[in-house]
Amino acid sequence: MGKGSCAASFSLPKFDPAHHLHIVTIDRRMLESGPGWANNAPVFDRLYADRVAGYHGAAHEDFTLGEGV
Image (cartoon, rainbow, N blue to C red):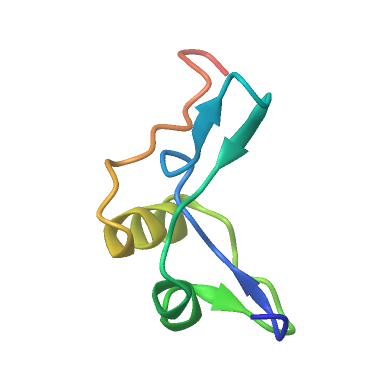
């Protein structure tokens, strides 16, 4: 932590309406050993999204914008 960026799936944050913010509860060791980068960011494509989601045990993320786009 503090040495790079850690990737997390979009499905991990849970909204707290009382405080108007999103909360992610995750073990620090899970973040440190998971997908991330220190200097050169990865290509943020479908493969990377699937890798991040799979690492965190999250569902497949669908980022398509719809037909004809």
